[in-house]
Length: 98
View 1 (cartoon, rainbow, N blue to C red):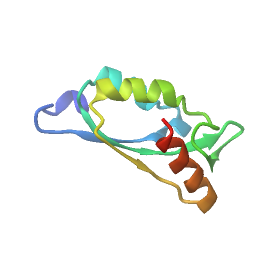
View 2 (cartoon, rainbow, N blue to C red; view 1 turned 180 degrees about the vertical axis):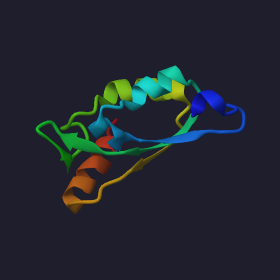
View 3 (cartoon, rainbow, N blue to C red; view 1 turned 30 degrees about the vertical axis):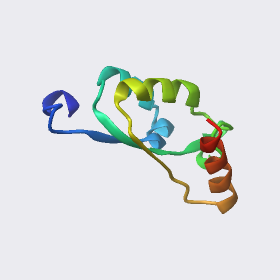
View 4 (cartoon, helix red, strand yellow; view 1 turned 90 degrees about the vertical axis):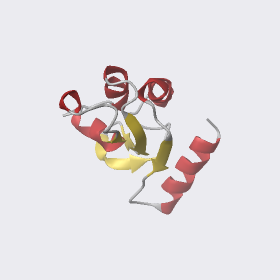
């Protein structure tokens, strides 16, 4: 879709949950520089890709993610957790300490 839309008119949001289907945000950030304005951040257990875990303890390579985000044009991040509030707090702490 991004190949067919005008980059000056259309920016996207990346849902990091797509990693559970094999899609890494950083690959898209690098392939389509400047096209991503925001991302919803989530991390998942290495042995159970349906279980949300505290960022930095799961399958997402956050160092690479944030390096690539500079290329992708990311301006806003949203920590998205639909489970245990303690997971959300751990993620908030992780992002604060980046």
